[in-house]
Image (cartoon, rainbow, N blue to C red):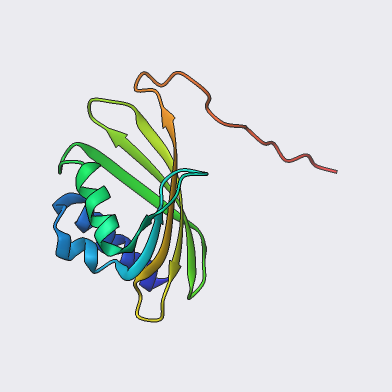
Length: 132
């Protein structure tokens, strides 16, 4: 794994827990775009991101999050994440993060799929490799 993505993800998780504007600002450029759902316009600029973050905030201890990199380059990372909430549905996440040379994100795409709390619902495809 690339160390810069580990640092950025640590900072994101710190901001998620703290909900502090300075922690959030450290992640994104002033003109960053934050996409939350396909077809929905982004939250634009750091002030738009801060407003959305405050409206959608989670409280520390309400969730656990684990992640793994799918692809990482110096300017882009694709992350697969899993968010488990204590008292509601969890989510499978796909993040695409575009980075500027200073390490902040200029574009962040966060798409999620709800997983019912009882574990029911689609589990995803199982692919078995065939041997020739």
